[in-house]
Length: 358
Image (cartoon, rainbow, N blue to C red; front, side, top):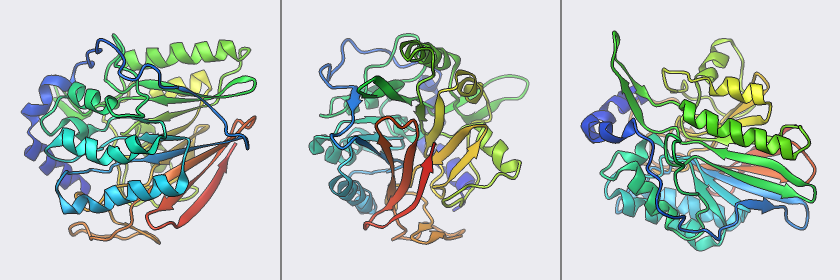
């Protein structure tokens, strides 16, 4: 099934009415942070390295055997990579019971002793629980370092984590909630994926200025993690810019609405990479406008489409082929180095497409 047909059918199955009441609202802040002692300023290992592991689009359904590979993929990657931080960029679940599904697929993270955070995806609030309820359940799990939703900032999972060396903060990892769907009534009704709102941009800019000031007026190298890619990725591909590595198996599916986040990143001069998921047949890296667009590797099982095999994209107009290869993306940072390296790790252990980004 092609992606757009799938999305249309999924919207019917989940019910637009079930989504509409909460997608246009910011998540209400909870009374207190569940894990107030959790460290959010990370530090390099003794060898001067720091490793971030990204999962995305696990699309887990509790009790569904099609999800088995997703769970095994998560467990294997955690055991083999032993990262210093894990970031899941959303679409954690894909069915009912949604809270139980989230707890099961995130349980290996909770048991690992490794700090982790999430940036929610569009499907994470489509199967019965509100976004607030889902986020609260996730934050209650051990090891989660996400803070509670921020007053006046759209969405739930907006956050900022830092990596510090001997001279202070060297990298910032911003997490944005790209939400679900949005319906804007007007002369032409717009029904599309949601977009990063102005309150989120204002929140980011304030933090970016703060980090810059504490760094002697120099922007701190940063990365932005969220689920749904930006419109500028389509613009880059339309201009003929090619990925420098990875598989490009389908067109990106961003919102139809552009709130200018990419321009803000350019203006602030700190974000060097935008890391997303959402489009399951892509795991490429594409530079555009001084920023690298980076797709994570699909980490799910067979509950949803995925045609990425071990040797690249496998075209198919039919249903998902069982046994296509899940995986994750890894980022490696070295103390004193403003850049990073990144590569894809496949379920089973194969690592490929190492790229150094300065």
